[in-house]
Image (cartoon, rainbow, N blue to C red; front, side, top):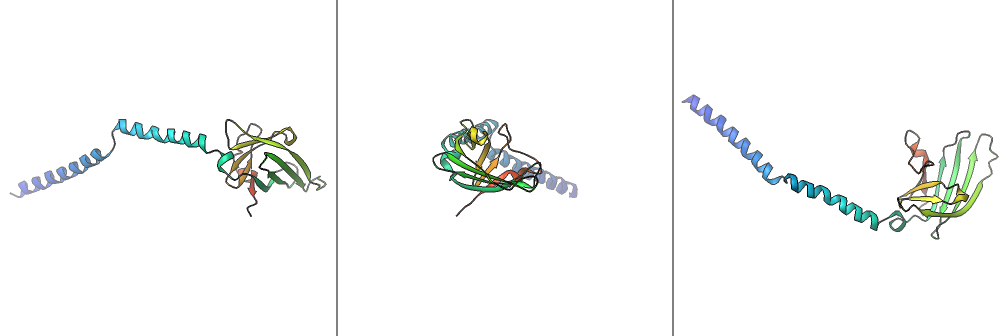
Length: 163
């Protein structure tokens, strides 16, 4: 009799465990449903990306400041003013080293990159430098327009003077 009760208890445990798994599989989406769900965010993201660009969604006009790294000095105090008419004023002061400490001022125009609307390119007067425009930041990019990575990456970020 005890063997029968033990067998029934074990069988009941297996049935309960199996019924819980069945409930999970019933509520989980099928593979085809998952494919539809997985593709939906990509379509939505594409629509959002084309509608909301840094140019029209961010308050990018303003003054950005920071100290950029320098190979032969203590740093370059950098002030970048982006104006609503897509002109800029760039003031750079080399700190320490062989520098005379006089600011170098450059004025010109800039444009948003048609392939990546979060990137601006300064005109030839600004040496065609590129900056990634984020929320209250302008990050200096390398010559190819890529973010600088590694331990010094944070040193390339200019912060917007928010008043």
